[in-house]
Length: 227
Image 1: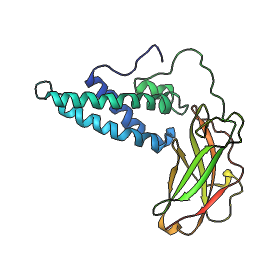
Image 2: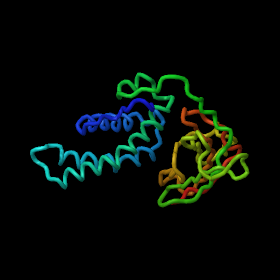
Image 3: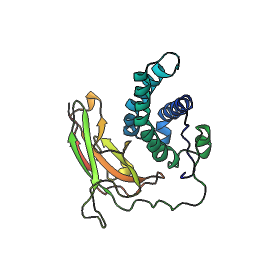
Image 4: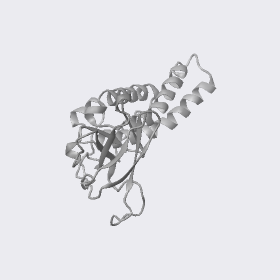
């Protein structure tokens, strides 16, 4: 969308636009497989904008300081909103063209270079977190060909973690009953208190920007659920 700016210039129009994006993405995050981390990263700048704009939107009843706070809030929020729209909506194959149209968005015209399916598997590490949580860290394995950093591979948006608690021990990711997506490491997986003391098994795969999964880790990484 290099030649089209879908973000409205006026504050009133921007406020309406961003709220539709934020509330719709929040409501449909499960079906669109939007990671909780991505929405969490947007929440504080969204709330700061709404609060500042609510105070400063009346031109007959606002101070210069309130206008400045509103402008500062938008300056922080708008680039994060753009990033979210591109990564989690426009490049998300689970979001249809009709969905985008309803949000005043569209995919760019013309043929783009296809994002390849991930060809490597994540290196995952598990540690106990507070309460009944487990932290799942993920990164590129150093032995993978062409790896120059330990972050996500090029074209990868997130990791998909599949897991199973207790017996029988899963032989592959296909035996797992639960899953979670995360774009930032580590991912936090929560369990109920009655699962404390049981062993949980994790598999993981990279997921690209068009929601294609790569191969899952061939063997599980496990840990005892704390509590």
